[in-house]
Length: 180
Image (cartoon, rainbow, N blue to C red; front, side, top):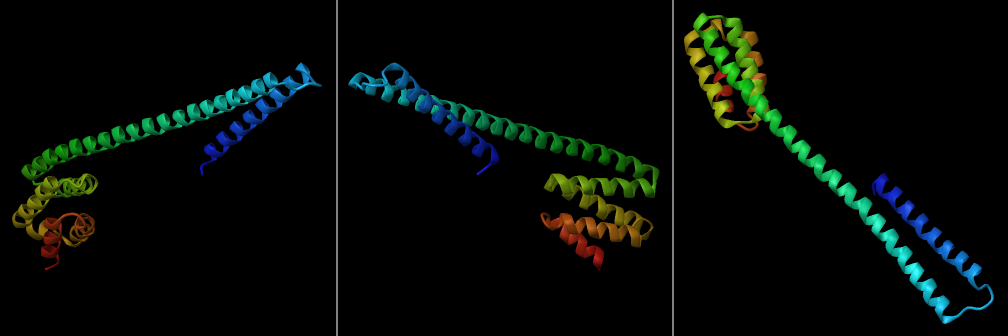
């Protein structure tokens, strides 16, 4: 049971108790000596109205929390969608930067683009992007060989591909190819 639910129950019980005390005080003021059928009906109806008021208040607070939870859930969905969209945009930019680095034959920029693309695919888990990166790595391996794939770069690739390999078969196959 959450703390808010306990607080809500506590308030409801206090309101119910106060309504019972108010009814009893009213009855004592009205006719302290005689008790008629009419007084009994008024007391019973007052109790029912008090109980209904407490239940309506309880349900209104519960409805407020339900709406709050639903709004938070929708905001989380929007936030998740925004993160994925940003990652896809970042992937597109890195693809363009990789092509530019390949034309300039800048090894450091090629490595950086590969690292960033692998980070992005790790977040989005998009199979097409992973396959694209793996195909680029294969092409780079044949084009640059050990110049690009030195020990440090290969070690970092193994770590990143190991993480991606949990959801991509092509990453696992390329990882095995690197280890050979």
